Image (cartoon, rainbow, N blue to C red; front, side, top):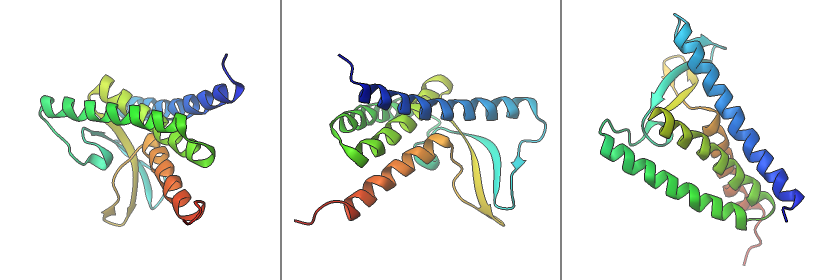
Length: 158
């Protein structure tokens, strides 16, 4: 029998995945139809599509298919581990792992479909640009941050 709580968790995961997918679909379509490759949102934020073949923030980018496929398999294994941790977790940790899992699903979907992950959120100050990222990366980073804060603030000291 499926518990109501599990249905709720499933819909949170689905919602995060869909928000990520929709944002990426919109930026890819815009990029394919627009002559201007950058949307300036503010003095510090612009949207500019880049294709990331690496892991987080373009680290470990490979042009060679063999290494890319190995990296993708490692990421899929890590996603299974995160899923297992999510199932076993409770309270705030469960939500943190759900965010990490959902964001990871969004990015691995792109790796499998596009052989690359579309990143498009570009924070910058004058000529300094932070790593370009996407909505899935926001959820992954937020989930990891929640786990770290949970360890520091909510665990009882032994």
